[in-house]
Image (cartoon, rainbow, N blue to C red; front, side, top):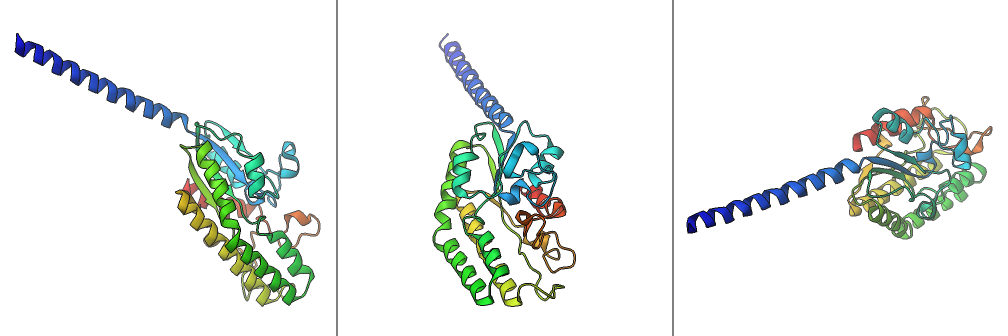
Length: 269
């Protein structure tokens, strides 16, 4: 009789343990299955400025159907797709206006941010309109900002993403180098200016990569996919100065989004 009771207790314990493990596994599977939504955050390089085909409803944010987030979503059909990236966005704009769709069901997040904080639009305007020395001084100001101030701003954004979407795989996209040195351009900026701008882009990318890694995010480096397709390459995937639509200047074309950004994001995602 005593042996029967012991056996019964053991059987009950085993059944309870199996039920608990099965329940936990089911809950984990349920959570995993639920976290399949995709949220695309960031600035104009993510919204698709320069690619055309803008969603009229996005207004000044200029979200393009040819931007890499929209292209990826169309190809992979996530359970939900929220496209909040916006032209001109800085880190503070992401924090204030773009994080709303993030939640427990978010399984994938993409973001490009930091270029506007560093003032790269003003850098390019300065370099196009003023002397080489003025250009190089402005580039150095941007470099100093990237080194001293940008890391804490990136950390704030990345922390907020992790808090709001704890199950998400986050891919942080970098920026291309703008110029092919000793390329086909015979006018415009000097080689010193082009080299300095490329160097600043490299510094920006390395800073973003380092901060993304600290948070456990994946960094998507697009410099290799854009190599051979920079301004002055003869086959550019980046707009040079576009006087017809100045806002598209120094942004990826539709080919830059589909062949420069999309493969890097797709591989990282």
